[in-house]
Length: 214
Ligand code: ADP
Ligand code: AMP
Image (cartoon, rainbow, N blue to C red; front, top):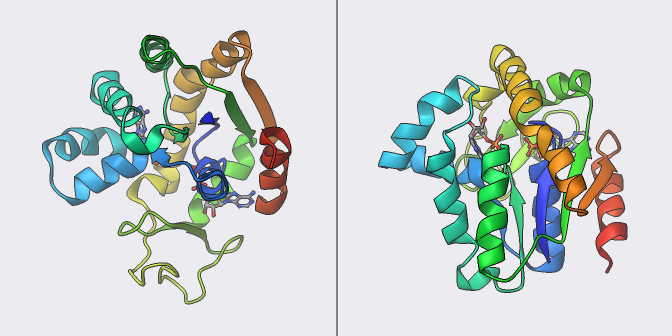
């Protein structure tokens, strides 16, 4: 099962992608997590990506595409994967389609998690991230057992630099300009599935599993 999660920043792509990965036993590939891990480890890629991320801008396509195309050819992706945060531009989608065609395979579904901008602004201010293991929480909708401590690994939780209100609005503008056109792209490819992302997390997940099957 080869899936793409589409939606605005904060729509709940990562939340749902983690649940999909666990249920269907496929890897969750988040380009945002990959960049954050590279920043934490001080790699060249991390250094290049950080200034774009902190400003709420997209990292240039050439830093993202090869990385994902390599990742989906690894052994653990044989039975599928769920891409979260990629593609984010039409050239990224075209590069993925071309690479998959070469591999003789295709995307099964691009799942668009639909949430209006006003809900997003509320969600992002409450998001807390574990930079050690990638877990995500929300102070109101999905609180950790102990405030500001990761349930999974015990590390401290942070408000991501790019989740501060001034950057969130920029990211939403970038989403509408550069990423939203992918809805049309995957509609034309015949693989778009729409899910109402304003529902509770469990109801969003049920809509997705109704689509994908047991
Ligand atoms: P994305 O990966 O699309 O940027 P996340 O999955 O990190 O978004 O979700 C953004 C924030 O909203 C997180 O704090 C998450 O806990 C919370 N969240 C996710 N889904 C829902 C939902 N259905 N209802 C309320 N809050 C949600
Ligand atoms: P995310 O964790 O998916 O919200 O991504 C955080 C940030 O990483 C984004 O705002 C971008 O700056 C960068 N990023 C992640 N994925 C991509 C991508 N596919 N293309 C360009 N930039 C990306």
